[in-house]
Amino acid sequence: MSTPTAASAASHGAPSLRGSRQPLSDRVFRWALFISLTVGVVTLAVLIAYVTIKGWPRLNSTLWTNMPSIRRPERAGAQSAITGTLWVIGFTALFALPTGILAALHLEEFAKPNSRFQRLVEVNIQNLAAVPSIVYGILGLAFFARALALGQSVITASLTLSLLILPIVIISTREALRAVPRNIRDGSLALGATEWQTAYRQTLPAAIPGIATGVILALSRAIGEAAPLLLLGAVTFITFNPTGPLSGYTTLPIQIFNWTKDSREEFQILASATIVLLLVLLLAMNLAAILIRNRTQKRW
Amino acid sequence: MRLAKPSITISALALTALALAACGGGSSGSSDSGLSGQVAIDGSSTVFPLTALAAEDFQVENSGVQVKVGSSGTGGGFEKFCRGETDANDASRPIKDEEAAACAAAGITYGALTVAVDAITVVVNKENTWATCLTTDQLAAIWSPDSVVGSWNEVDPSFPAEPIKLFGPGTDSGTFDYFTDVVNGEEGASRTDFTPSEDDNVIVQGVSGSKGGLGYFGFTYYEENADSLNAVQIDSGSGCVSPSAATAQDGTYTPLSRPLFVYPSVDALARPEVAAFFQFYVDNDASIAEGAQYVPLNDSQRQQLEQDFDALLSKAGAVGASPSAASQ
Image 1 (cartoon, chains in turn cyan, brown):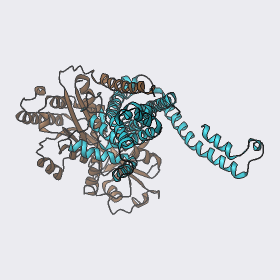
Image 2 (tube, each protein chain N blue to C red):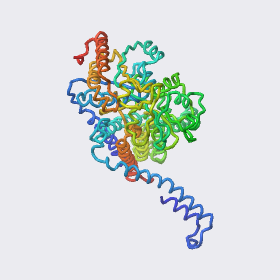
Image 3 (cartoon, one colour):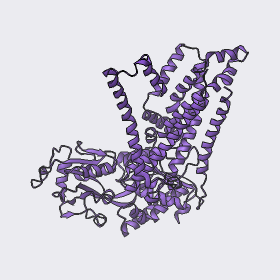
């Protein structure tokens, strides 16, 4: 927030000019910026207001204490979707975080910079980050669900979502590692630490705030993801909580999708209430990311 | 930097807590019947409400059994069923020859159970005062693959020159197969310039939103939306007949009423949890059909269902090591 103000002040030159009229092009540009900002913010505000008002009657504890129900729409809840989301995201974190962070550590600290292999890997990761999520769904269906015969299970969903967020985890971890000043590594090495000790004891801990922020944002992307799960066959009526990695599951976005498909008004309201729940969950995760960043940010 | 170490611990703790929370939610499975295991069913979105209701009611008494019910369409469901990925398939039409061949190739044996009767309802906009009854020939004229009918007066000169806007189920749906079969004489043969959707709600909104709209879907959806749509009577040669439970059950609402099927796999029925689920389904068929707003079977149809199921169970008993405990 403070950066644009500082930049615009600088572009105006000396403070003594502040009182004078700005050129027309300046004002037009400012308005264009402001309107562009408004489009995004107003859309979000309208969306949140709409679902909150529509879902208000169902925004109570039955949302998480009750299971989905066709027979009693007025008493249906989203418990199986909530626990399903926790299971799927828990396992996604378990697979994607160590893999992604270690891969980034290798690329940033150990791999030979600018070697052919390194460049190939980098191009691949950048491209993978841009692959549409539905493509990961096809991969998951063919490889995890069918070839490995994991079926429609929590583990299939988690592995697929892990692949989806892995490039994001790697890229954000690399950025965080890159922000650690060179002299910390040099200092550690000069004191006799090995490369491994330097990475593990100095570089990685110093980069944790940045990594945590990136990882939380990656996981919140995975939480809202429905397209790959649709392909994995998650569009099912599930009234039980997962009991293990091979159990069937449903997630919040899928449950919302299912309910909006039903013409009964109760389910439309329930879908809105569940959207609010999902939004609150996502906002909480983003808030956590911001807090972690602000609390632990260091300046060198 | 010294700050950073605790945050590793914190994030690890957060993850553990997440995992534990998830576990805690799942381990409340004190099964009342002692049965456990998973039952996977997919198939027709028309039969889905029936099977999902059966699953919901069944799991109240058998919380150890996890029943998952999908709705990827009759055809899509048979594809999974014949790969052995599901234990049973919901179908709004009998299995096709090529699907049967795929199942045979995979060594999957099955039986067909008729669980309820459905009526396809042709719907028009509330403001449509002219089309109260259509003959099957008129329907065919509108929907045939080479149809160029663009407004209502081309269907019948006495109708106004209101443009027709057509809505229908997607080509994956059993309802589409069934409608095209009985109206156009060939399964899948339909004009293509209509708005298709697997989501019946889209059809409801489309037809209720345009004065010249015409669409078709299951009777359930019409009943739920009766205040925003008009149902068209169908004349197949012996007078106009309204779609209703009674006319579907007694077969007078021809040709647009049809039986709905569930195809359980014989191998799966050898598992006690699957057998118990289908026994429950058969025993409570009437209340399930009613709850899902379908037309329940009449008495002779019910007896047929019980006979068919017992025959399947005894086949399954021959396959499985233990004959189903739930069959009595």
